Amino acid sequence: MLYWLTGLSDGGGLFNLFQYITFRSGMAFFTALIFGFVFGQPLINLLRRRQRFGQPIRLDGPESHLQTKAGTPTMGGVLILGALLVSTLLWGRLDNPYVWMLLFVTGAFGVLGFMDDYAKITRNTHAGLSGRVRLGLGFAISAVAAAWATWFHPAELTGQLAFPVFKNVLLNLGLLFVPFATLVIVGAANAVNLTDGLDGLAIMPVMIAGATLGIIAYTVGRTDFTTYLDVHYVPGTGEILIFTSALIGGGLGFLWYNAPPAAVFMGDTGSLALGGALGAIAVAIKHELVLGIVGGLFVAEALSVIVQVAYFKRTGKRVFLMAPIHHHFEKRGWAEPQIVIRFWIISLILALIGLATLKLR
Image (cartoon, rainbow, N blue to C red; front, side, top):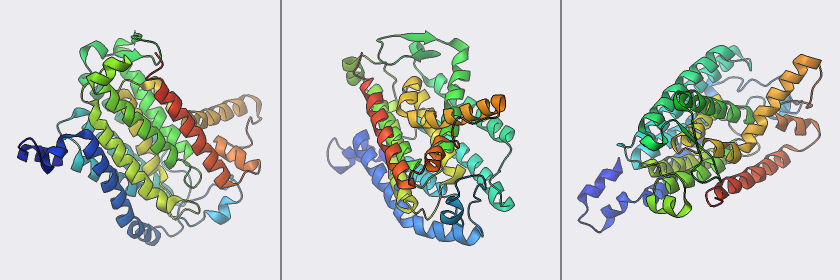
């Protein structure tokens, strides 16, 4: 919104700053961060009053959770989404289709997650919406976003799947690209949701992945960078850096209250929305496969559940002591902060590998 203040510039001075993505990204970060600090505690107080028992705790989960996490309010993702949406609307270019696509995905998945959290709280059970309803709505949201991004991609990239590392290697998926992109977004949303099981575990890897994808988005949105790095140019994606900067600022504001011991959980309201946003960014910037590297931690968490369920149905035995895999390490005696910090380190390493694909060609 404030981008339009550049119209008041005579070619120099303060208003001229608003045309620069880097300046607006920095301001988006600080706006979202301040939003989180200002509204964080009032939101937590409100959630405590509204949620008598807090987030329901799984009875079959780690025993320590029944003592340490019982009564903690959920739906803290509202804080992240509020900071993210306000900051993006304030500092982003509102004539950019990718900005609106990301806002749509984030908001829609946020509403879906809110419905799931609300069902859990009102019924006082960890089972929220039925799996069919949640997946069905998730696929509908993702399909709209996939078609949206495809419509605005340049003609030479429409329906194409780009491969990291290999120069100019494209796989023409044609009409199958939209279903593929839909799976990427749904998969990312649910993978982050599965990762959100310990204090601070999900939000930091989300911020790391968001920062990485934001840098890539800024890079592929500039012809000088894409020419130098020999990557595909996707015009307009530079504005996504505004969105990811706001995500990081809002995420840090939330982490202030979510750090162990957490005063609030993000809930499905936050995890589904943020995961969906990461998937949508990857689709917009034509780096769907790189998301699998950058978000490798989320992939591992999701695969651990898939493997556990499939193996148990076939043999009646378990591969892991408990899934998702972070609970497996809890069962093995790892302390919660130990798991969280080590998973953060893994996320950072994977992010650096993902960034390296820009140069390794």
